[in-house]
Length: 260
Image 1: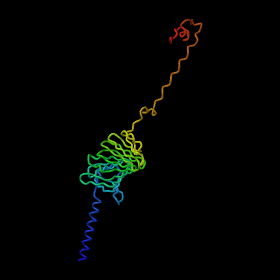
Image 2 (image 1 turned 90 degrees about the vertical axis):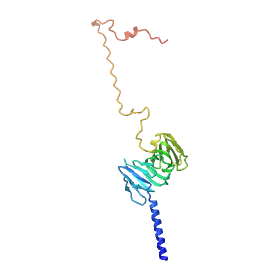
Image 3 (image 1 turned 135 degrees about the vertical axis):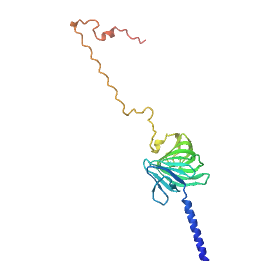
Image 4 (image 1 turned 90 degrees about the horizontal axis):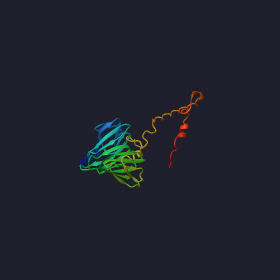
């Protein structure tokens, strides 16, 4: 009887452990596209080459090399693009069938997030200096490590709260947010106005007004022609008289200019 009871207890423990392991490994997202060199690292495993249709789990890390990207779609339909030279960790993400909640750590690089109209207000994206609240929106996040975070809001609204003593701010589509430090207040500005602060490449940057191309390949001004040499003094033997004098004679004969 005791031996049978022991077997039953062991069976229950094994079943619970297997169920718990399956629950922890449940997929939260799928890789939909990989350009060039992208990598993923499941918790407790070595880094793997990311491939299309790979299933991602909680605490999985993603990394891209130069000129590479990884496209991810979460189980609720929202999407995240990990752009060139970027790193993140899917720290926590739960979808209960109606809404999502959780945390994604954006460690460094450039990211593009869109909720696709899904109710994911419970999802937070955290950088080294700020935590980003999602409000049914689409935005770009430029993370310059521990130095700065810039958020370009394309649609909807985004709240950025510095991770220290700085004050949070809410900005809407067509605006950008700058968080220059965990203890500094977040700032709102026009879309794209803070791009250089994040260290991200300014692909669409235009020259400043009045400076477009002025210092580059500007042609040299044409040389001034040499003034003509004055006429030689008339030879008294060649019949020169009136009309053959210099221009000074003409100035003397002109009427004075009336300044009054």
